[in-house]
Image (cartoon, rainbow, N blue to C red; front, side, top):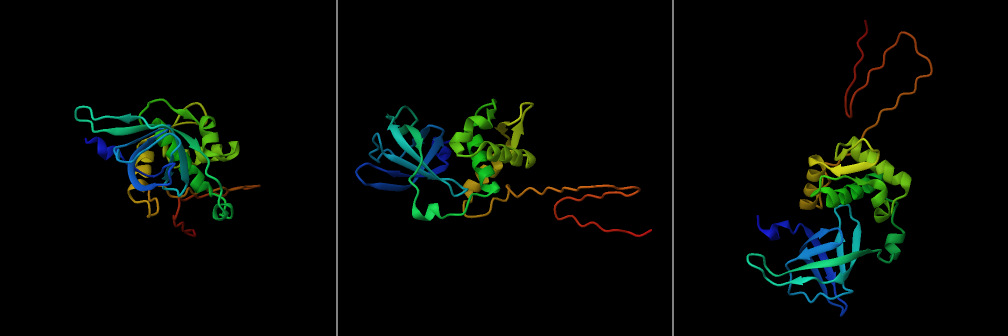
Length: 217
């Protein structure tokens, strides 16, 4: 497989001298961003911006451009060491509606995907909660959402997770079609029945969109 086919992210690079380079193919992996666009003069302090499929803007600051010359069949490339930064809030973002549980869960899925797709080891929700900017309650709720949708592999320890095949499909399909609804990431339907007192009766339960009919004796 060509290395260039692994560049699945689209980033924007803003240099310190005011130049902007958009739609740059790259691979964002935690604190490292790789790209073959070596014609861009990247320096320490430049900004890297990635817009996730969930519509969240991620901002990184370049700490080391990490330029590598061509070696054998590997073309020249940047392997930038970056740190995550929080973009300054704008008037429009400050007035935006609060994130839904759906968006929080999808943001968590993206981080789990990036951190575990090449590893057999799980990560703990608590370890990525600050990175996601979620409260303990919201982070645990997002984990339960992903568990119930079977998009993560869970373990005996609560709130440990690793991406599974269904989760990978959801993320990669969404990146291929960012303007379309995430078909592999539908909402979860919960049915709750509270019974105070019941004698000689039955409860019949159906799934999402199921039709239940009653036949009189």
